[in-house]
Image 1 (cartoon, protein in one colour):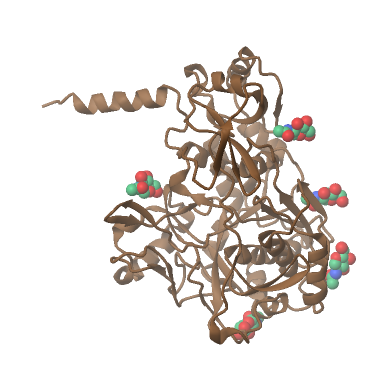
Image 2: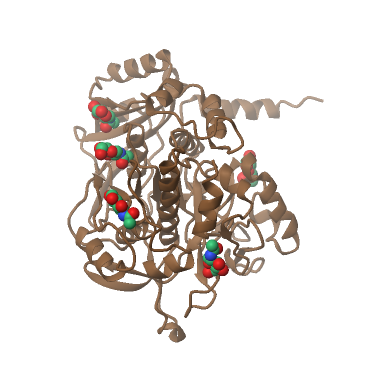
Length: 560
Ligand SMILES: *[C@@H]1O[C@H](CO)[C@@H](O)[C@H](O)[C@H]1NC(C)=O
Ligand SMILES: *[C@@H]1O[C@H](CO)[C@@H](O)[C@H](O)[C@H]1NC(C)=O
Ligand SMILES: *[C@@H]1O[C@H](CO)[C@@H](O)[C@H](O)[C@H]1NC(C)=O
Ligand SMILES: *[C@@H]1O[C@H](CO)[C@@H](O)[C@H](O)[C@H]1NC(C)=O
Ligand SMILES: *[C@@H]1O[C@H](CO)[C@@H](O)[C@H](O)[C@H]1NC(C)=O
């Protein structure tokens, strides 16, 4: 017998989607640490970012898979920004509808990008609230930082709904200040010398000759969004203290964004000092706080910037992440498309896997699940986890750093390039896996790689500081190594590695040190007792394929 309920529920769902909420699943709560500082004045100007619907997304994905798969005849045949633009550029109709919608509200101050799929407009607050029914703009402050966000979800008119992915600048907050951490030294470990460039170079088998030759336009970049800065003087001092055994640069070639004054941030110093130690003698850029208007989302601004710059470094390392469950699916899907746009151009994007192991989300008083993090969980970036030395007093083999982020996405399905490897792990580790209710075994599994993440020395505000830890250390370290490999490939006339995962998963451990010991953090409950997943031979969701053995990895990646 037919019951009316399924139809009724379907109608409800359709009406939710069609009443114009582009991001009905976006978390709009402002955490307590942001103090409410009142409504925004009607005439105050906001900067909103409109993500226009793109075309040919299947073709983009297919192209990315072909240019990144070493067995494809199209391998390395990357696209220029102009070619990406002609592929994904929104249809004439989409552009016309969105422009006339904005114009009908008197909005004319908009900037576009080369791919024409983002519009960034300056809009008075009262106009924005009419344009986006439901939105209510308030100001919030935290540690001297001030932002403008909407306290309620926004909607858009039915006519434009199908032409937009989302509108940026209303909800997502700047990163939580999830900074590189300083650990309390363990009482027995105080004599440990800690990780320095020469320790890393020894462990990953980099000789003094393994530096960039810079004969081709090779460069690398770090991007960070924590409202903090690296100081050129810290970098110079760091290289003076730790760089005597290898040829290196002591200056950043280009800063994109706003490099403010004030104290240097640990994270910013760490990123730049270490990408320039493994990726030594390679031109380095820093992307820092692009878009510092109170109503902007810095990470989104960085993505917009990538679509507007035709000449970019080949490798980018990024330490930014949010819980998947706090972000709308529409936003994550679109950002994932932006990652594809970068990959198809031959750009490698490396994200830190996070510092909370498998993470934990309390669904209700008796039920917990692991908590994947985005963009670490995107299938189109390379995600880097963390390790420690087995013997903290020596350059020995590596084991899991218990903080190393890893797990399975609830949003992105497992990409083809990793299916065999991940299923191999799930089968081999079946007896020791956490209960299936804690994770989604059909999702994109991460990390892909790892590197040391424990007990680094960093020069910050002119002082060498020990015990700095986190996957925000391992990510630039691996980024620098990828840049060295690109350097050698470019010298031989080969294309850069670009989106690395399809090739990485075909290496089957070649050129990598497998990490097989230790487990990372999970939920502190009776069922899993603080444990997430455990490292195992071959790929695992704690340290990926393991850590780089440079000469062997280079040999495996220079063949074609
Ligand atoms: C993109 O770059 C062009 C110049 O190349 C500039 O006119 C435009 O304003 C930029 N767009 C944004 C969003 O900054
Ligand atoms: C690299 O390092 C490992 C361990 O530190 C060592 O066993 C190996 O011989 C080194 N060289 C190469 C080319 O792998
Ligand atoms: C370092 O880079 C410069 C170009 O910037 C190049 O001339 C030099 O040979 C490189 N050093 C080494 C040791 O390869
Ligand atoms: C390539 O070289 C040119 C000329 O030196 C420079 O302006 C440009 O920034 C370089 N591009 C990258 C991505 O490093
Ligand atoms: C598990 O992941 C798949 C995609 O990989 C998704 O379709 C499904 O909804 C997820 N399940 C849960 C419970 O989140």
